[in-house]
Amino acid sequence: MDKLIIEGGVPLQGSIRVSGAKNAALPILMACLLAEGPVALSNVPRLADIRTSLKLLNILGCETTFEGNEAASRVVDLKPEAPYELVKTMRASVLCLGPLLARLGEARVALPGGCAIGARPVDLHLRGFERMGAEFEITEGFIKGRCKGGLKGAKITLDFPTVGGTENILMAASLADGPSTIENAAREPEVVDLANFLNACGAKISGHGTSVITVEGVPSLSGCDYRIMPDRIEAGTYMAAAAITGGELEILDCPFSDLDAVSYKLREMGVWLQEEEDYVLVRRANGLLKNVDVTTQPHPGFPTDMQAQLMALMCFGQGTGTIEEKIFENRFMHVLELVRLGADIRLKSRTAMVHGVGRLVGAPVMASDLRASASLVLAGLAAEGTTTIERIYHLDRGYENIEAKLSGVGARIQRVGG
Figure (tube, rainbow, N blue to C red):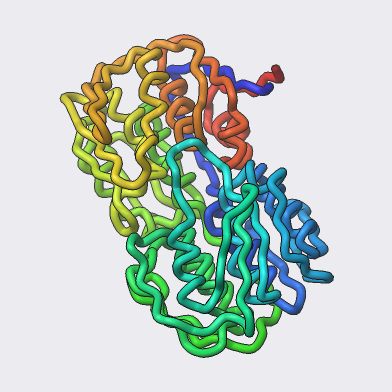
């Protein structure tokens, strides 16, 4: 099993380019099931989850290709079953449920897996589909759905602005008979990117990016050419990398307008950010960092996917800051690994109290999920000595060529086969 070995203490300098957004590409790939014509996607990140999604599309009856950062899909013979062997490795696989119900009137999808950061139930997805006329049973580890006579447009109010639920319902509503309204919808930029893709295929969606999305169902969708948005979480991670190493980075293809909550907290800590025409320049403002209080929230609040990275940065800040996790109940598994490097972090329920220590020392650590992996990479870049990160397959699910990108700006980091 591969691992990363990092010799810390090098300030990062230079330019680093942000890849396409994994969390936008995955639902858009599943949305290809809705299109009756070929779809060509560009700026697709080369990640393990992308390859898993393309395998799933093949099983569901699509012909796909993936060369460079371009992917293509065409539905040939659509089938209703998503097997456990693929779905167990990636939670986003459940996003095929809406398109299959919309196109075939039935679906049999294994209950999802993915990162071990909490239950993340799909009940909100199912309730939305039930409002549109679908019926479900969960048996033998599968969600079995059927809608006699096709999906009907409906008013759907979500109990929580779930990103996956909003995306799944949005895809299904695009081909439903009549209008649909999704209230308390997720406002994340990746939801907006999915809606823009669907509209490019001929859907009639408005209000995306707000808490109320309206959809006028259409009889069919065509294919299109579409470019995936840049990854805001990857961009935020590299911002933190510049700050934690005391370096200076130009972040190319940075979706800066989607990072307001992150940039606000970084500036509050003492990080200097300057948006230029083609990049965002990041460095420490005066050499010192000051710890802050953070609460994760649905967009436009501080993203849960940046919580672990900010925690690593706060290990080098002055004073004490708190991080309250309100999205996932089990997303502090990186804390004990940071403590192995010398961090001073106290946990109480869903709140972590981080006391800046100003210095970490390299040690062997183990990644537990995708963003935890990123926090350990950041900590290793700034720690004294050698940090070895095991189980980096989590990292490969969300960061394209991270060791190559970091090496290009001066990091001493290498991948070693196990």
